[in-house]
Image 1 (cartoon, rainbow, N blue to C red):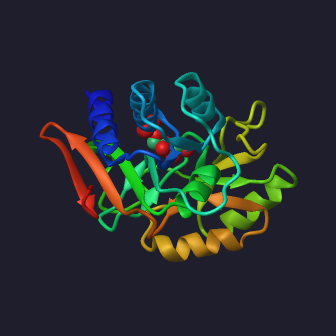
Image 2: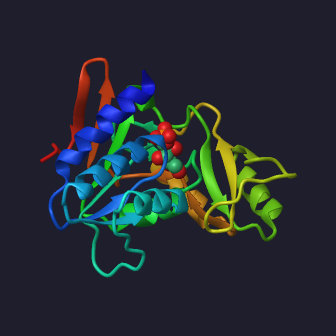
Image 3: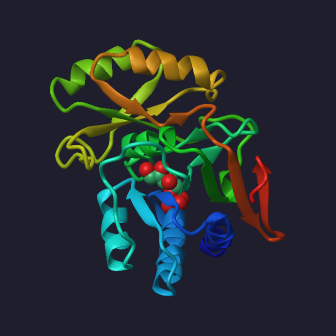
Length: 226
Ligand code: 5RP
């Protein structure tokens, strides 16, 4: 059922697409439904270009005939991406798929940032699950120590023998905050200050609209679609 809801939310977002747009293409299973749907529209003659947030999305877009842009001057018209957690202020945790840095770069360059989720992603407070933090591989244990000094616990994604490596050649530390994240803005600022941290998965104040799907169909929260 969850995947069906993901598809419903992603397809609703296709209604925001207009001829000529430059579109940020998110990563993960929900965003994949959007890219596949966009590919169908392109096959029918729609002229758009995509900015992929990961190598996997770039490959999918190329397969589906969506022209790709990797060097950007100016802004992206619309970005559609998934999320791991969405709070009532539309702040997010992203990065379960490890694409958080490129996802944040694309979101930050977008006129409109739309999140598509199934209803299981809505939470009262962020931090139910882990918060992914991308770090440089060089001296990563020292970076991890500086992070734990903030009062969080963490694990290296994939483990030390076969660590997960991001599209940028970096590592992911999955951070847990006991009791949840009470102040996402402050935590985001603290994480960014840690030497060795490339980016973190807190997206605070970036989302324009969340399209959430459940048994009652899709509904939009935030800036109305259209
Ligand atoms: C990848 C992400 C994804 O958007 C997020 O993990 C949601 O994935 P899914 O749509 O598969 O549930 O942030 O880095």
